[in-house]
Length: 188
Image 1: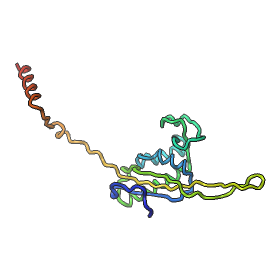
Image 2: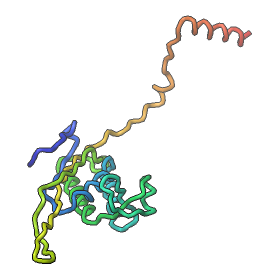
Image 3: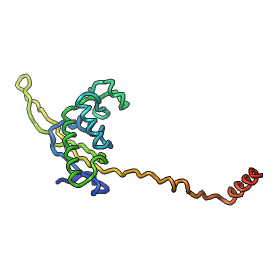
Image 4: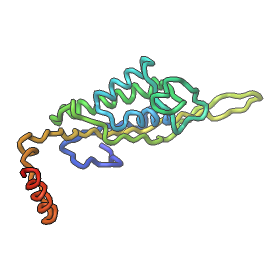
């Protein structure tokens, strides 16, 4: 098990998943990871499935040179978007792995949200392409490392009604005297 760049605040309430030297484009995967950061596990999986079906799109904000403009990007308040299939498949596999890790730890899968996701460039792999006049040029791939931490979010507990209604308001002496005087005037 490798070292993560960020450890969770409460390790008992979180689970991790990572992949190293994954043969998927770094730039596309980076943008896809940014799109699902902060979502719950269920929403992230649904979003990636919708991207694969071209019902939703991944907004491209950073590596967007030569990216086409589409009307679907308006939802995210940008103009450029894509549907990176391979990146979505790799991230869905990692989410599935993190989900099984959470079940092993006994966490509530419905309460998990992506608190940390990071995509780093991995070492490029070399191939060669043959050009005119007997020349050879490099033909490099851009793999990446992906790591994510899912944390069980705290449940919001509603305040009981009796505590809210019996709240004592502290008044200054001056304000208490004003209130008493106005009560005498109203009673008279």
